[in-house]
Length: 153
Image (cartoon, rainbow, N blue to C red; front, side, top):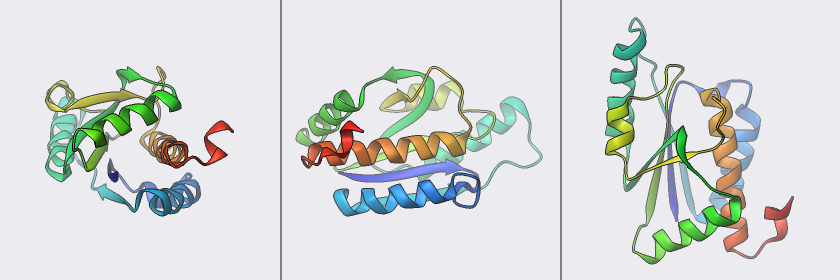
């Protein structure tokens, strides 16, 4: 499976930059392709206006099957996620775009227009932390699918 991680803001330079890069490298080694696309925040806009601008930016950068990360989405265990990714691949999906909103989140229209919405946690996570968690979990998913033991710990 090929992954495109699209995030609002500069996560590659923040607090979680090192784990994001470490797990992106590991994910690329197993999946073959995992790219990080960082989009500019909508400076000057606030609230719903900011969500609308950033959500439109996320949508335009998506390729393949679109998945929005949001606490209201479907929650799965790592094993369930690995099975789901395998099922998607079996149906011909080759690229997943995972969209991570900015500080104000995403619009309902983006979530409703996406192919799926996944929850990493019922908690609200910063976009940097959400990106670190999803990259690490995608690595676990691919490790599990490849038969590596890492997914257990």
